[in-house]
Image 1 (tube, rainbow, N blue to C red):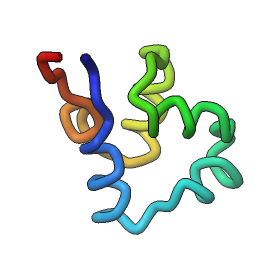
Image 2: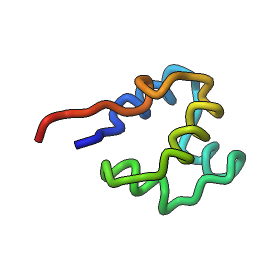
Image 3: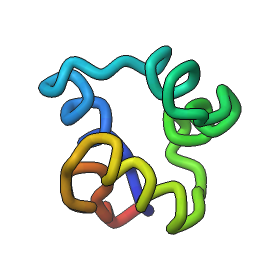
Length: 66
């Protein structure tokens, strides 16, 4: 299972909020909900998050055995 716990930690460290992602970066509220629920997202979404947060993929997601 891919989890996005590290995304929230990275956002916190960089002072970026969910509101900022939606209002300033064009991410949809439903996408933020998908990330919160650890549901699947496209690799394009991961790429966009890496660009906005100026980080690597391992700073956003990790694999955990179910």
